[in-house]
Amino acid sequence: MKYGGKMEATIALPDLEKEFEETMDELRFSEDLKMSVRNFLGILRQKSEFTYAHSLRVGFLARKIARFMHLPENALFLAGIFHDLGKSQIPLSTLHKTAGWTSEDAKIMESHVMDSYRILRDKFDFSAAVVLLHHQFQPNAYPLELPVSSQKYSKAEQVLIEECGRVLAIADVYDAMHRKNNKLEEGEFLTEEQIREKMLEFNEDRVELIEQLYNVGILERGIIPTDNPDEQLYEKAWQYLPLNISNSRVPRETARLVTLAAALEPLADKAGCTTRFTDVSRHLKLEYFVTGAINLGNAFEDLVSRLNGSPCIQGIYSHALQAQRESLKNRSGGRINQGIIELLVPIVAGQHLFYSGEPKDLSIILARAKNIALKSTGRGDVDSLIAMKRFAHGLCRYNERPVPEHPEAKNVFEYYSMDLASSTSVTGIAHNGEFVNGFPTVKLMYDTIMNSSKRLFMRKVEEAFQHGLKMHDKGVGRGFLADCVAAAIYLCLSQNPKIQLVV
Image (tube, rainbow, N blue to C red; front, top):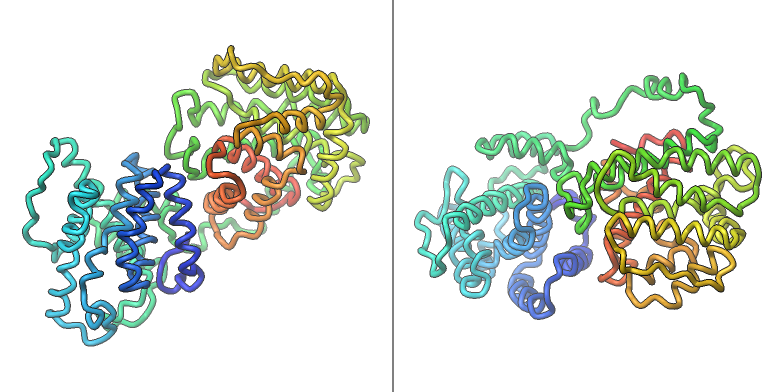
């Protein structure tokens, strides 16, 4: 998301509040906790929507930094949204003052930290302790004396509280610098590069962290000319390939893009998924995803070679089984790439049906994927799909988890339709429905990535993931959505062959 001031007009308060509710769902807050949080924030919202919006943005940013640093996301999100609660006690004549700022005004404003602490303690004790520190890391630190907590924190917990307070201070000042600083009568917005310089200046004890946050895109640096290659050099990257890029459906190029999409998907910051910041479990390490992605290429190259030689669909799911088996080469780990393979086999087939060399309209391709690639398969394809699922389950030792056979299904479309009808879990319904309904989540994510105003590829993918979350029940498995992201990335690359997507 974008932050504050000059960009704030693009994020209406209802959008911030929607993201706030979605974040509480992602963090699996109980209904009682959600109600308590809303009640606390309601006090601030009533006093100052400007300060309330700032608090929400700080909470979102603090949570992202927490995930990057492997700190408790819940605690920093709560500390972020609560850090300025005490400003509900500040007179509006001071809180919204835009000129003539005095030392007396500063003294009144400083009281908000202790007021925030008093409001939160005994209800959100850990967050209260973190909030107490968010102005302690600046030259004119306040409050000068910190109260003794009624809670007995261990030394490890005290260190964690201080680290979370340091992160909160970073998130707070970053958001604040995206507004006009009328209190100091500067009256002008800072550029992204000016903000970066001040972030480094104000955080001399955390220069390395600030640089890392900019490098991974959590903090936005803005566009720098050296970020993008010379256009002529970019053209030469295609010129000397032993492929005609206008003929984007050749087997080797399709295999490359499948591999690239599957390898890129886990890098973006997506809650509940393995990312470049964290492995979601010991079975789902980032290196397993990258290895598995590279191993997919041969199966999809064979699939495209088959379809380019003949438009016959029956038998294509033997390549799905091949891809799943080969994804295990040279790695340990669990069930990697099953969903990606399932989504991409019909989509790739839909692209190559009646192939004429140029990318077709995506709606036509997805319609072909559903109405031809799925419906023209045979029972042998169903059996290959079942064998693929069993192999994938075996990777996680799901030996007692049966794979439905649906013996009445004559083709893969019927198999997914029958499985959808018998599904009871929200993830099963979403997964099977994706095929039966013509890949709506993949299409939404493709459109989001292609139309996103965000510059960085990772931000585009994160936005697409969030749109997918909104489309489904909040309990849907994050792995299913990650699979849809991978399919969408593949389509962005294959439908727009020379796109400079990764920036």
